[in-house]
Length: 143
Length: 137
Image 1 (spheres, chains in turn yellow, brown):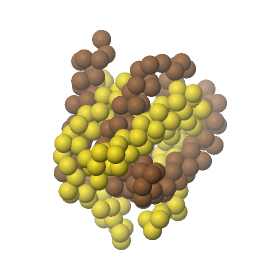
Image 2 (cartoon, one colour):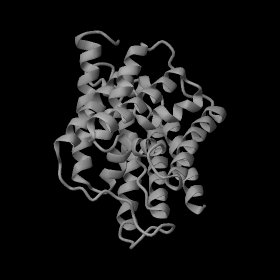
Image 3 (cartoon, one colour):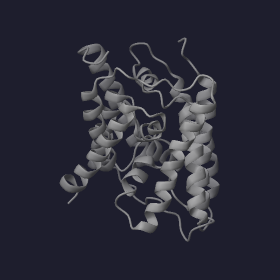
């Protein structure tokens, strides 16, 4: 438990909640990242602009933190590429099929008390936990 | 114009939140999902923090007739739990557990010049496009 960081987690989470609240109050949009990423290449130009800027902001926020914080975020180097390629593909297809990801369902949807989002969140949490168990402990493919 | 500025600022806050909370550290995410091993419950607190703000504010925001800078809220009106929702969520969870990245942290990590995050984002888009051409009719 030496890596337990509840305070920064709460603070970061609150910022994410604030970001989602601003986007909804001002623009009427849900801050679902998979939907915003997907919409970047599938909407009329006028609709693409705000999505592109939101995603640009996402990257800028990360760069800002990395530049000014003392600890920074460790960049993982040695992880098997096959897992990233297959896993990334599954994240893409799964979030489109299920209409959302951690942000859209897990934060915005649950904040809106959506039964669909609560079910989706419980499902991907369970599936993520089982996947880690199988890959790490049962088979040892990824450890 | 106003909407675009809002989107940019909202994106920056979201990215900062992902970074400060360490959601962008994929190994920390994997440790969060590893409940039978070296479990790190920190990331549950990201959700608690985000939901504490979201649940409070969304109630008031969605009571309004419209958002401030648009004519209507763009909120899904679907209420039924169907097979694609649960299957999609299950598939997403497998990918999340394989990599430690969900879409937000993967995209934000492009700012760290992480090779792995770049490949992750490209693979996510490959998934999006496959869904568009093969799954959705």
